[in-house]
Image (cartoon, rainbow, N blue to C red; front, side, top):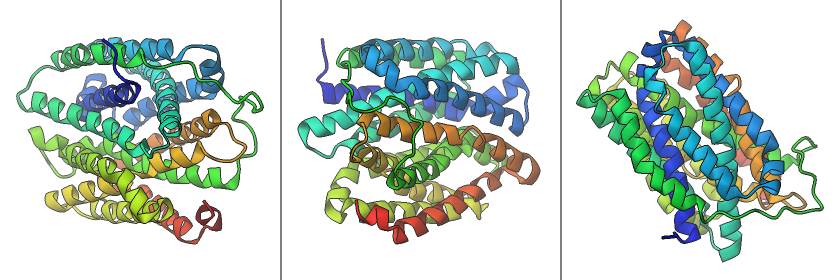
Length: 378
């Protein structure tokens, strides 16, 4: 049995994020297991980012030398195996080691998948990036809902992990079989260390702003709901569920909206909706207003990164692998310091204030989207 390449790419996006859904809702459990404060959890996110950056910096060379199929299989199976260890770990040091390996696997996996998605868009001459990322969001949403149900019925963390591994193992295997070795542009350097065009810098800023919101919700949404909104049981997962549910909706219709509004106008609208949603989260202590904010910001942010990947892979005189790698490295590099900042804010001012710097980033992004001549030229 072999999937067609478009279905397989969607399946792999689904698998990688399904595990993120497990992580998102179980973060409070991990925090309690290793007995750390918010700052300590922030450090684990930093270590994850370091692992991601290591493989992302090397990604162009790795992908040029090895078959993506085997890289995907190794990364996917390693992630699966590590989830069978996490529920038993009570050591912060061991959690750092696990986070480093998790990050390394996620880093190379994300570059491969976004490169595959970009290549398929060009091969079929069709806008598909948002639909691929929709399956990332569907996976995250599904993983969050299922984990929230396990949490509601007090089903053990380890059984939760085993269930996820059993479900995803076959999909990772079948999806990886369709990946082929990418042929790079031999005229281009494989190093990401060069003077980036200004338009790439803009895409980088938009991407880190979007992932600041996505990562902020994935990493802090459950803690925000439990420790600030005082949610219990299934309600703890509502931030992730509503945010990712509306992100799924946004990505399912995103390609059509891009064609309808034009890619620049739709990008500007997406940034503005994300800003409005973030305001509702950052400045409200009401359960329903917060959920509304998560829903609106999820819909708004849904297409920002897919648009940036599409445009970065099409910049003139820049190899597509490098364009995608630059965006991905910038996103994870940003989280070298963002988690510690968010942990510091949570510890000293309250967990709800982790969304305030995200709000500021979206204000800046809105001004760039409106007034940047380089972006309008695209």
